[in-house]
Image (cartoon, one colour):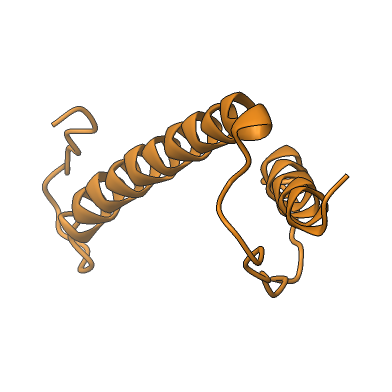
Length: 92
């Protein structure tokens, strides 16, 4: 096994561990770029990892948008008490 292939395999392993532990609070790790281009024999694995990363990013962005909508809804709730009943539109 070449040094380049070994370095790429270590990097892909690191990416997979990060994806598998995405819900856990882990300290960020420094990434060392491999010394050469991606070996063709692991291109399919790298593309699968990239696809998983893109799905994760999409999920995070969707969650962020949902939280933003909830915060907007919470800001609409009056902070002072009134004698009239207050209704909160949670859907819209």
